Structures are given as structure tokens and as C-alpha cells.
Image (cartoon, rainbow, N blue to C red; front, side):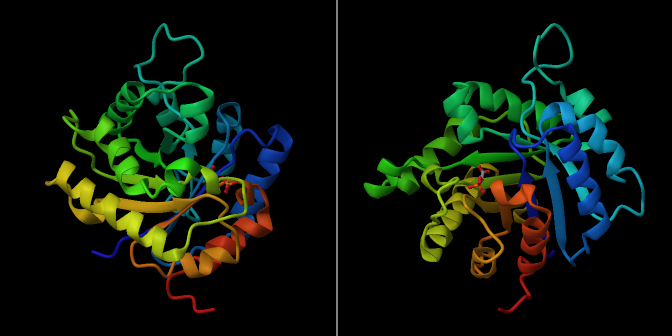
Length: 261
Ligand code: PGA
């Protein structure tokens, strides 16, 4: 089975209400669906309600832009102040959730144990996790990237109490996020292949088409063209460039594997 590619916009906390709605409307109006490609936007939580009204996620005629969240509660709905539960996310038509972004691991002290609970919660409730891994600069410079990423994966997925239907891993070197610097193509390919191998051992019964490995960190409309040609790159997690209509739509078009520059 051919894997569909994923282009995921991580809006972080960049956009307010009016700008967020305007961007979602512009994307719905101008997005031309590409074969074998899924496009997801992940606005900050308070925007999800308004944007779910803009995206025709519940219609057969959806033009292919789906909704994701930037986090998910580790608990079911209940007495968890400040959390957003999987049931509300599902009500809003969120099919995807970013889990373990380095900005949350660092800025919000999210631990492997917490991330594992969030992953289980998402998977058990039909929300596809976009699980982020990636090394800091000193690890990259000391050539320990593969061991570091493998440790991040085993920390959450060993003895994992659920079988994912769909799993997305986003490889995001921390030093590449927001820096306009990306790894060499060969480095991305090596890391993605290593992630793939580690996951096949951790989830031997999950078909390989159900696991996709995407790259994130300073993706733009130009560098995506060569990255998407790498055999193990199944798409992108896009930060800054996803809040520009023109840049994001260009990334969507230029990330067509068949595209030749
Ligand atoms: P960036 O962010 O594209 O702005 O580098 C990517 C991310 O953090 O997901």
C-alpha cells in the first residue's frame, strides 16, 4: 500500500483569533489537494472551535485539510484544570495531536512518563499522535544522534500498552527549529531509517504503512523539494512557514514526491 505523505502545520502560539480564522479560510479556498497527501493544521487550543467551523472536516467533500491539536491531556475529561481532553478534541474534529514537541519537553518540563500517558490516551481514543523526537546541538556535534533518538523512542514505546493504528514520528533536531539550518539530506535519511528500524522492533505487528516518519525544523518552500525525494521522508512538520498562506501552500505543492525541480 502506498503511504500518503503528510504536511502538518504547527501554528505554535503565533496567531490570534482573526488571523487564525483568516488563514484557515484562505487555505480552504486555495488549497489544491495533491494525490496521496494529507494536510493538517494545528492551531493553538482556543482557536480549534472557530477553525473547526471553517474546515469542512465532517463533509465527504472535504478538500483535504484536517485539524490537529498541539497537545492532548493525559487524562479523560474530568477534574484536570487547564487540560484539554481527547473527547473534546474529537468533538472538534481533531484527528491528530502533536505530542512531545521539544518546546513542551523543555518549556513545560514534559517527561517521558507523561508523554507515554498522552500517547496511550490519543491512540486508545482514535487520535493519531505526531510524536516528536530530536537531539540538541551538543548531541548532534558529538555524533550521538542515533542513540539519543532511539532512547527517546524506547523511553515511551517499550512495554507500550496499546497498539497504534496509525503513528507519526516527527524527527525535529532541536538546533534546526527556527534556525534556518537543516541537516544534510544524508543525515535525515540515516535518522529516519534508524527510527523506522527501532519502531519495527517496538511494534512488530503494526504494518509499516501505518507508521510515517516526517521531518521538522526550518522547512520551507524551497528545501522541502529535495528533502521529500529522500526515500524515508514521509512529509513535514512545518512551524514558522505554516503561518504564511503562500509559503504553506507552496510547501504542499513542492512536497509532491513526483515533483521534479
Ligand atoms: P520551524 O518549527 O519550522 O519554525 O523551524 C518547526 C517545529 O517546531 O515544529
